[in-house]
Length: 144
Image 1 (cartoon, rainbow, N blue to C red):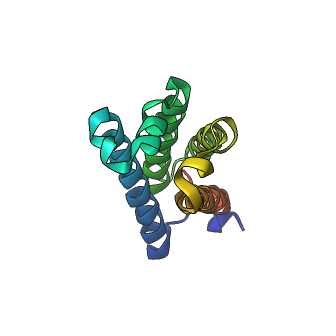
Image 2 (cartoon, helix red, strand yellow):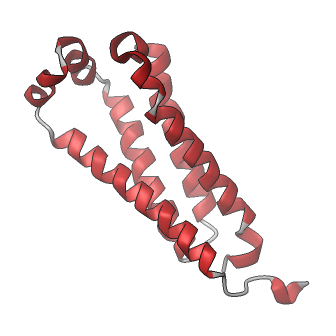
């Protein structure tokens, strides 16, 4: 049994880890784009949506930053087969929950964005859960 532990991973492992890394890098890029866009640029979305985005509290933006940063770090650690990938994914997941709590509970994003608010946040949560599941499932087989 011990000869199966820490063996070289299959190509599927690297493909899945690569997809996770790409996903998280896209999230990081979107965060950077969001934070570097001047508030006037959001005016084209309409006054309610622009005000919602402009009034996002600092702690929610910090949760966004932590979520995407730790998502990228976790994905890189997964590619490198390091055991710290799982805790990094968990930090990212908790940060996603904090950000969604702010949007859906504290400020009611649905009243401003309507049903489109139910598209991306659940997708992000589902992918985060899959990343955590996968990092746990390969932990004893491939981590160094």
